[in-house]
Image 1 (spheres, rainbow, N blue to C red):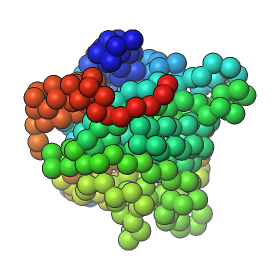
Image 2: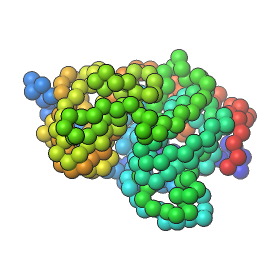
Image 3: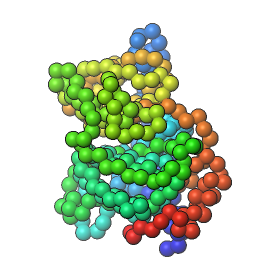
Length: 325
């Protein structure tokens, strides 16, 4: 298949269709302002979206952009795809997403169950298992592929993953591509009092503990809570912030957020009070909005139409390197 045909048919037609085609969202709560309560307001609690396949290995619900302007609302976070737990049968056929390009973003994959293997055109290779993270800066351009790790693929089992795209600032769009694999025990962490759980600091800072990834003005926490956990924290009011309930169930500032729901927080001062109804995993995202123009086309997120055209030309001309599928 020619590069141009692959870009149109494979990337836009399947794996990354969520960027261009809206899926309905069900807001189970658009909340009134909580001004003067000392708690940060909740803008909406979003129930799980319809699922679609990314390649043949990821069955995801797309919380944003989802055709609802969330690529602006949650800037610099551009895409949130969540593969809630699903059982993949044993297979001799590779399951995942084949070789495809990226430019202008960072892609971050979190493993909760199962295992994923990564290869890219810069020679990077990594395997992530439960609790691990892979952080790829596409920057000026890279080809990569992600598949179920071979041993897991042959045995099958429970699979649960999350992928984020972070839009890079204009001044860093063309930074050299790089890859970082972070094993679960290596993530900086903060133990909550009385054995209530652990806040793994992926990026930014939590109570003085800094994450091992250094993106631009972002806080990202992988929080694992025991049943009955009860604690509060704050995020910068000017940062766009949200919480995904990966597993379990919580109350956020006295509003229920069940498993696989997404909580959009208002941009205002206040505590974020969490109570866990059961053993729970949360992904907390908070970032300073870029406030820059952007243009997206499939796997590319740039600032102008001309830059998108250049990205397509560079890809078609082989400037992203080579990677065997």
